[in-house]
Length: 153
Image 1 (cartoon, rainbow, N blue to C red):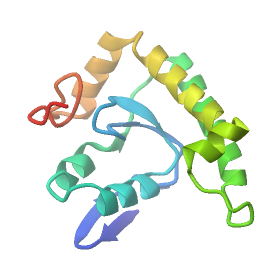
Image 2 (cartoon, helix red, strand yellow):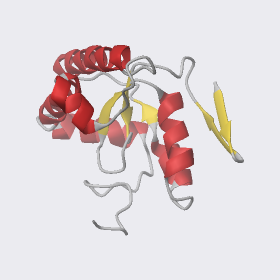
Image 3 (cartoon, helix red, strand yellow):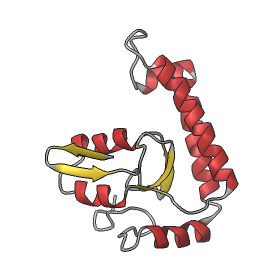
Image 4 (cartoon, helix red, strand yellow):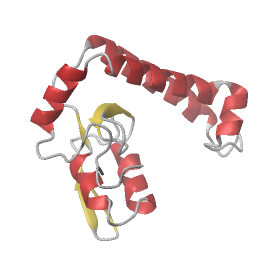
């Protein structure tokens, strides 16, 4: 599937609405669950500085290799929590992605607790993930912390 916006084009694998575990969903995270590449690409194209867009689109991709079962399981937990948020994130409820709104209801907190759990488990497999990343994302400028090493935060 191709996503186009303001002169930018991004090709996604088959069904772009996942769920996937992807490399570089965010610049400072090696891999994480991504429920919609379409949504993430739209966010990159509309909210990120234009100088960052080419690299972000280049390195954003689903993981193709085998991952530890514990990461696959936690990704499914993240997707379930996201579905719970989406059920309430409708015009009828008057809600939005406002963290205060979701924290008060525990739904937002449950999603981010699962995301943090995924990251904690991913940190237990640095060799495996680094090797797989090197195979699947050759030439990636990631320095171990960000895909923008020249812009240390």
